[in-house]
Length: 115
Length: 116
Image (cartoon, rainbow over all chains, first blue to last red; front, side, top):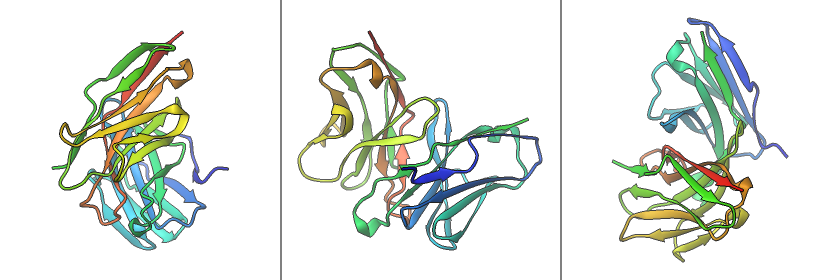
C-alpha cells in the first residue's frame, strides 16, 4: 500500500560527492515536493514541481537542484554535498490545486549523513 | 509573511487525560490548515484539515481540531490520550504564494509524550 517511495532510507556520503535522492509516487499526482527536516526547525521546502519538467524553488534551494522527467518521479540532487546538508529529506506528492484535495502524501524519508 | 507557530516543544500528558497541542497561524486571507503526525523513523501522516465550514474538524485516530479565526489558532485535541499517541505533531498552513497551490508551511513540531 506504499504510495510515495523514497529509494534510500539511509545514506552516508563524503563532502564534495554528488548525491541523488529519488522519489516515486504511484497516485498520478501533479505536484511533488522535497522538504528537509531538522530538529527544532520543522520541515522546510527545498524545491517543488507542479508538472513534468516544471520546477520551482522553495524556501531553501541553495545547494540543491531537482529533476522531473516523468510524472511519477522527482529527484533531488546535491551537486557537491556539504556537512550542513546532513538531514532527513522527505518527498511528498499531492493532486493539483484545482482538485481541491490539498493533502500531501509523504514518503518514509531519506536520512543523509555527509562526512 | 505567512507562518505557523507551535509554542510548545513538548507536551506531556497521562494516559486517559485529554490532550491539546497548540498551533497559531499568520496568513493573508482564509487559511487552509492541516495537522500531520510523525512516528519514529517514519514519514508524516495526515491527521485532519480545515478548509471551510464547521470550525470543529474531526480526523483520524480520534483527533479533532478547532479553528478559531479571532485567535488565529488551530489547536489539536483528543478527549482521552493513549500511549500510542506519543509522536511528533506538525501544524501546517497552505502557502498561497507557491504556484503548486498545495505547498505547505510547517511549524517546528511538538513532541507529545503520553505516560501510562
